[in-house]
Length: 194
Image (cartoon, rainbow, N blue to C red; front, top):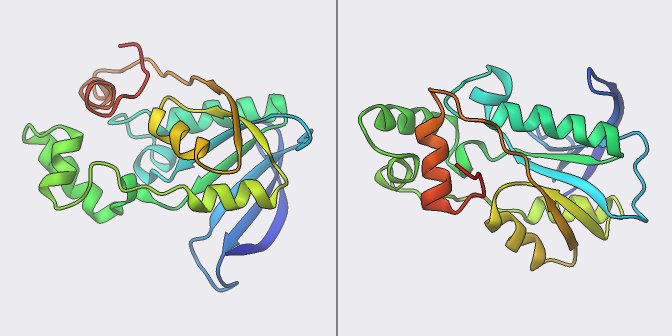
C-alpha cells in the first residue's frame, strides 16, 4: 500500500488534506486520511481510526452512533491539528450486504455480536494494519486515540505507535441505538458508561 493521491478538502469543520492509500492508483475504495491544518507529527497527535459505516456516516442511520462519532472526531481533529483515518472495512469487516443481513437478524432479536456470528463471521473482523501504515507514512510516532474501543487501543499498543492516551467519544444513546450500544458495552467491552 502507498499514498496514491492527495488534495485539500475545505469542510464544515475546517481545512483538511485528504490522502488516498491503496496498492494501486486504480483502486476505487482506498483507505483515507484526513489531516487537519495545524498537524504537527513531532507532538502527540489526536487520531481517530474510523471504520466505514455507510448507513451511519452517509445516511445518518440512528441504529448506531458511527456517524455522530465521525462528526465529533472531525471536529476534534480540526480544532487540535489531528487526523481522521477512514478505513474501508464496512460492518466491522463483513461488508455492507452482510451488515444489512445482520440488521434483519437484529430486528428478529439477535444482538449485534450474535448476528455477525450467526452469519458465519467473527464478532469483529476489523484489522488495523492499514491505519498503522498510514500513521507511519505521516511521520506520526505518538497519538491520543479517539475511541471507546479497548481492542483498538490494544491493537495500536502492539504497533510501533505510542498511545499516549485515549480521548473518549461517547454519544448519548437514542431509542433506536440503545440496544446496539448496550451490546457493544457489555459484549465487546466498549467504554460507554451506559
